[in-house]
Amino acid sequence: MALSIEERKIIQDYLPYGSRTEVAKQLGIRKQHINAYFIGETNSPKIERALLKKVKELKKVEEDSRIMFNGLFCRK
Image (cartoon, rainbow, N blue to C red):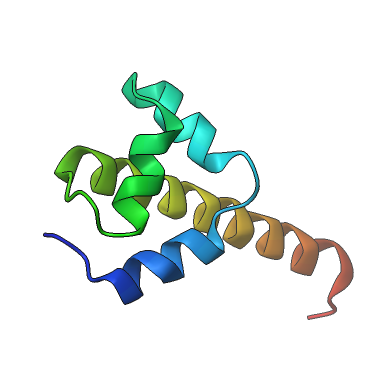
């Protein structure tokens, strides 16, 4: 797919502290490879898929938390 640098920046800004290290460990690579991907030095489909998967997981947690909050505190 090869995301643009701008799209990679959006992902980079979204990920919380420690996510790069977590993804790197999952892939068995160094964090520097993740950093190189973000600045466009490398185009790795494996890294890209792992980062997009991480964002998807985080968004799901946010959505579930919002639903739980609304169920607890919002009147219907």
